[in-house]
Image (cartoon, rainbow, N blue to C red; front, side, top):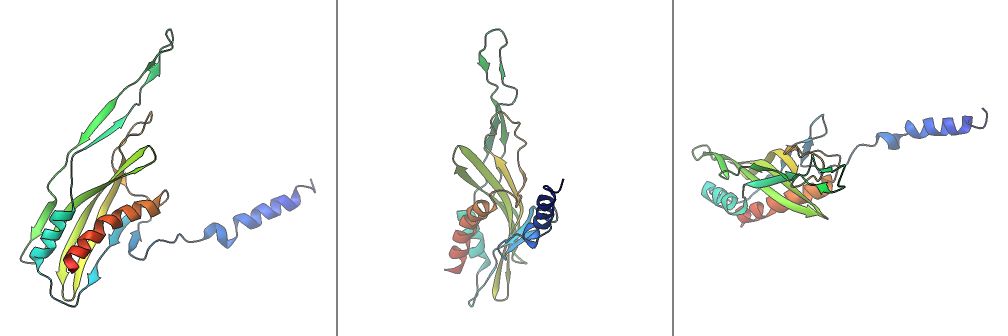
Length: 192
């Protein structure tokens, strides 16, 4: 019994050390909800010259897309007991696309757009969809992504549950980089 005591104390010390409770390092523009999903990403920026709202609309319209996507899985596939043949289920569902603009308020210089970005990692394909709020304030252009959701284009033998809120626990840096690659051209276009 005495031989195990140092190991037990070492395990308890490691489990309660500050390292075990270290805070995740997220970019300053990311707000994380209590359930560890992304609440919003703020891409807003200051400007020293007036910006026309028509320019904001044009930059968003030319840089965002919201196309129809197909989500697949092969859940329910089986191997025949007598033949040993593999019978593959090819389940597909279509998630409709829509107009980029959801709301445009020219008088108050505010809009809500929706967009998506697709990326491939190895054999996996991912699709992220989001709402982009844009507004003009004195000396500032507001650009905030909300309702960021992620879906796998194909989940193999697991059921494909479609779009779910973007979590911060798995591949967050690469997901953030993919969203930044969407926001950067919009910002550059407006800032020109």
